[in-house]
Image (cartoon, rainbow, N blue to C red; front, side):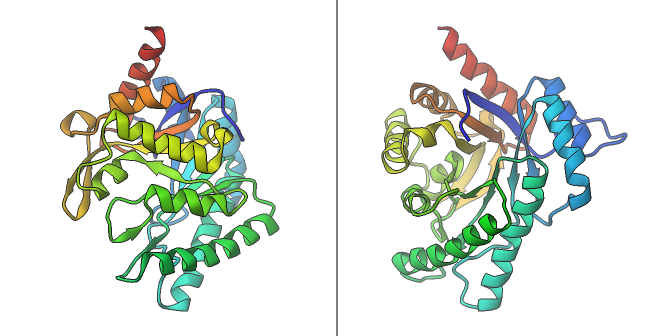
Length: 283
């Protein structure tokens, strides 16, 4: 799937969605009322939409012209020492992907693994082995959704940009979800300049091809971090996240797809970024 432009949306139901009758569907409708274009289904604790409800969610998204993505459960580790944990992780990815696909979501992301003091290459090989199983099952089930390991916010977690681009290059239907705030945090404040954004997107394009720039799933927020990496998300204006230069770089590279805001004030920062992005175009 390729997009013509960058769409901006919220991680979950917008906070300003009226409480009365609040649901995934009213959240999608409210996204459109706000002037945003996308919403991420938050399955981070559990897959909270029943399979039989999915077609009506899909219909609402189509009628509202809102693109859907999905964030899978946090309890995933494709490099766990225990086989039952790996088996459960694979099943969690499949459960989220199955329901999200039925809802019409085009992309499902998850945090892939932890190093647990193992050699990074060994962890990469383990994750690759289990991703192969995931993709085989996704294809066997006829799911069209993109499976996206996400760049992670702590150096103890598997998932820097290089690892995930290389992993994605090995499979069909796999691309990274690039969380630029996570990359900034996992390097304790680096990866936050125009030059570094240029380098990251050049590497992404070189590894995955120009068409991958038209099929992006991006997360962005303000972020609080220490030497050990991510602590928590912040509103953009309360952080040092250089979102303006990042948006300029995304535009220069002709990136398209969905950018999901994960700031605590999800719709405010999503609207802030959308306005800035399209103001760049005018000048």
